[in-house]
Image 1 (tube, rainbow, N blue to C red):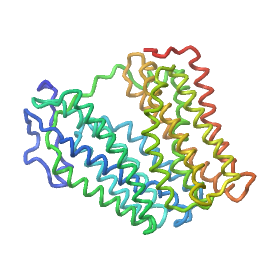
Image 2: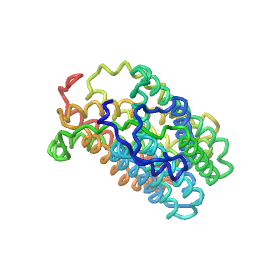
Image 3: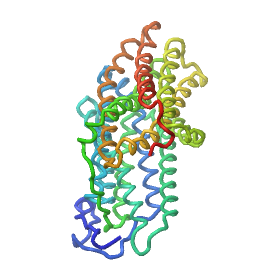
Image 4: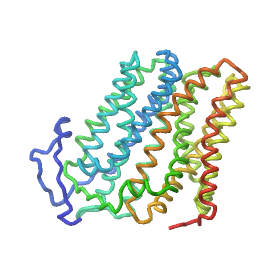
Length: 434
């Protein structure tokens, strides 16, 4: 990288942790990039700590705090909304303060959020906790991307193939952590949700101190690309706005793994610890399905999206009949819930990468950042508005066999409408439109 593109950022956060540079604004000509082992281990810890706690959050609100379905749904929606809003600014923040500082800030924010949850005995601390965990969760991806990019810069740079291999290793470590975390929760949930939250606090604090010592203090900070467009381009693109509206039902649907699935487990008489097994299965099946669905990548983007949203709708229709007729008696009683998790993950894998590919098509040479931000914004609002309604519907119909499927039919409606809208929008979209 040319010297003119080097920035040195004050390490204020590192000073707090005790690993700051002695002299700020110091330029180092040859950067020390992050050790691959540190990035891999850090990612596994982040994912493990998150999934140790969050899958059990709804059951804690339902069983211990005795909150209404509307409040439970609002808390879940608020966490997703905060995360999506932070996604909109996290890339810019990463380039402003650097990958290390952003990673440490994410650890600090997550630890603070879990600390609030560890003390939560009333809604105010609970809301603070879900807000902080949502914000903190959005800080890790851009920080890791910047740290990986740094591994390819300087006189001792890694080859591009090695950087890609390192990125894949970090992703696999995250998936392993996301499997181990809920499995640990499965074994430890009898100790209480507050104990799980304290475990999350300790993991993030330990990771923060460790990474503050291990990660390099000076970086190459790549300049953000100059923007060729703005939100005005997005707002003037009516077809993209329709696409954004259709896409918003994806995040609302996916968020039901964190809201409707735990509530259904409780309504059907299932044990709390089994939510950990369901989430571990969710991550495992997601990794396996990604490989299994590679044969679909040569299809049109519109076909993939219609298939994805139709799969989400099918998952909810399936659960509507399960809610009416099923009880979780014995281990085989959880198999229908595993099928729901499988279908939701299939829909996600078909939708998300395809929608991201279409962003370039809609941007038409303009800066893609506002387009990605619009997708995040719409999904966040959909979950924030829809989750309280779904939570209240599920609680209101839980004792009625005839109405138990109603919330699921309502949830099935939104991805079904999205599939119809996308099918009408792209009747002749080529397989590669750009």
